[in-house]
Image 1 (tube, rainbow, N blue to C red):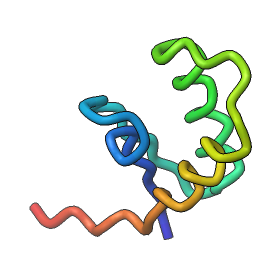
Image 2 (cartoon, rainbow, N blue to C red):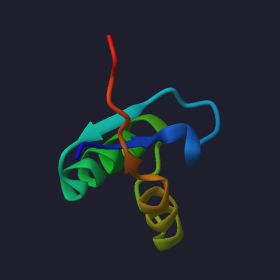
Image 3 (cartoon, rainbow, N blue to C red):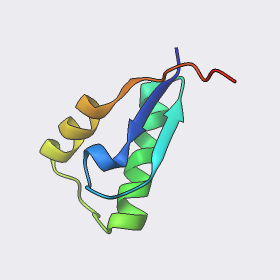
Image 4 (tube, rainbow, N blue to C red):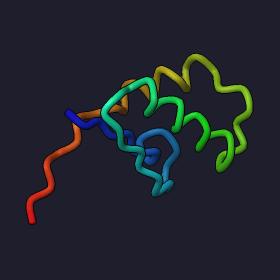
Length: 63
């Protein structure tokens, strides 16, 4: 199943949504986003845990 991580769940008001089949790749991309957009160069363990908790299964899109 596809997973998603909504940055808004960690950084209020941020519209970024990461999507991917693999949580490792999703977290890698998200940490790049956090570094580039939110200027967090040394994420704390708490931030990483908060992001991991925010990952959820992506709901199927119905057209």
